[in-house]
Amino acid sequence: MGILNITPDSFSDGGFFLTAESAILHAKKLVADGANILDIGAESTRPNFTPVTAAEEISRLEKILPAVKNFGVPISVDTYKPEVAEFALANGAAIINAVGGDMFKVAKKFNAPLILMHNKKFSSGDIISDVKNFFKKNLREDLQIIFDVGIGFGKTQEENLTLLKNLREFKFIDGREIPLLLGVSRKSVIGYATGFEVDNRDEATGAICVLAAAAGVNILRVHNVAMISKMLRMTDILIGG
Image 1 (tube, helix red, strand yellow):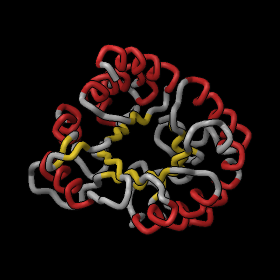
Image 2 (cartoon, rainbow, N blue to C red; image 1 turned 90 degrees about the vertical axis):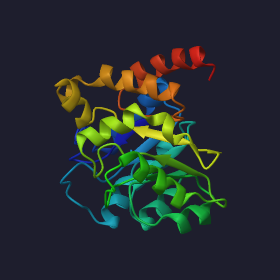
Image 3 (cartoon, rainbow, N blue to C red; image 1 turned 180 degrees about the vertical axis):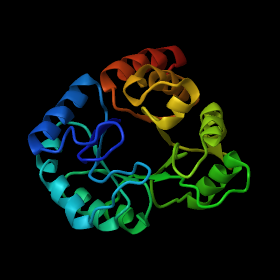
Image 4 (cartoon, rainbow, N blue to C red; image 1 turned 90 degrees about the horizontal axis):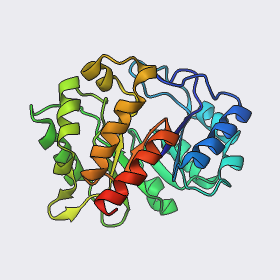
């Protein structure tokens, strides 16, 4: 999953793809580099981000969706606002990547896969159990749910590392195989663990993605698609994916 942030303030690439032309060109490059899904975010979700209205998110999306929906890969919209998700799905997107909000009605209306991310609101002191319980609570028979452990969302860095070291724990819940997405590209947990600055974290991101794929994670959300798609291609061969 290639990341396309059309925001001024995303932590890694904020401001790079604000114009429609630059966003569309980058989307095209991500697909050429090997992205199987494009994940478009029109509002930053970085810590202490500046919220924007649904109307502003929609305004940003409507400038690029008509072009990128024809690039041959599914489009995922990264939002917590149901009205933004509904607009995107009605205009070429296929997947909701919900960083919050109640998206069940919208997903059901459009029969769209729904990515649900764990964002810690409380803690039992056991982050693995907390995430598992969130997954159990949100399992649905009437929707295709993809789960995300939510690295960097409401968690300490040690909790983030615990989740990354134990991704296999989340592949089966109550005997049911769970589709998993991991979004860890260039995140602060890498800087915490290694000392690498944000513009020097792609190799470490790749290392995590290889181990995540081997642990059964289905979708890896990344910035550097060109490098990491090659790493995952070989990983798939070795693990029989």
